[in-house]
Length: 499
Image (cartoon, rainbow, N blue to C red; front, side, top):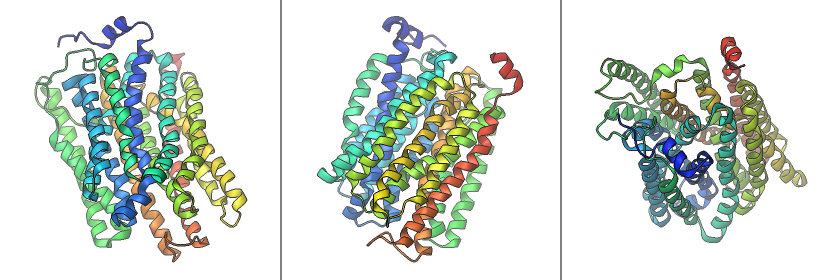
């Protein structure tokens, strides 16, 4: 393949020594737009539910539908980058994300709102793996942790400030304003992409529109498996045992078929490297222990992170009876602490082992969930201080996990496998996230019903007990992830080589 004139190296020569940091800023803006669109909707769910007369389960699909679409589309990122290059792929995703924001904001019917959320999720999913690919290709190994920390700091500032701004917008202008927030960010990201993002495909080669075909069979199996899993989880509580068993059984069968198809596709591609179909997921990556264990941690971490992102606002809005704008204000200090922590830990990630940083972060995250049970509504003077304290503790935990997990898990991979590795590890994290949003919603409704109460009406000890038990479930999930995190430790010969 021929080299493209707008490769990373050529853009570096054109823009000077600090180009890699400018490039990081360019992809950061688009990622901020996609992250904001995924998390900020949670503050608007009660208003949106009331407007469309929705129950909790249907309203939850505004979050989980986005997550499901984002999860599946991540697997297409390596194929899109090889076929169309960084710049074209990134710009098209920003256009789709902006279109989803505009359509969702003007929609008068819930199915149209849901369709807009799915479109936003598809765009966000393709964008999510790109920063990790850029960091691993544009930065030296000695700078990758720092770059990941700077990028993470910028990205988490969005959801940190987002709920505060979003809460104020919801109170002042209603739920539609949440959709319109992404539009200016998308416009800025497209302008930056035109100037700073290379037009080449990974490796500096020309994009090849006539290259390998997309693995549509694998994509269909992954989509159907994800939807069966999510609907099966919902049916566990809201439906019948028979329908839940049928859907979850179908999910297992579809995932098994997906694995078989991916193995066959990979073998066929190796026999005929210049023709055929690229596998959607390169299963040979899991032979690397750090990558395999990093994927396990990413999945469980996704369950805890996105599950809590859904649960915390619902807890404060419906459990404690706080207003949407007040919820955002309470979460703001924790978000700011997370941004600072990520920047500091990013420097540590270049010097300290990944397994140590990730395990410590998971321990803090588990503790923050478990300590939520100390908040009692009959002690109003302690409610806000404890909420802020435990939220900050959990965000410090996230600060130790985020800069080091992806980079540490992929350091053992060959450079040619970095796009696939970034795509897969983001996929399993988002699959965990989509599962976590559904799981928290189901667990909460299950415990609400078990305590004989409801989410509507005056607060009660029974409702608080249901929330407490759901937080304890998340704490147990984080503790489980620590077992896999300890196996991110590199082998003895790798450590001696690095020294």
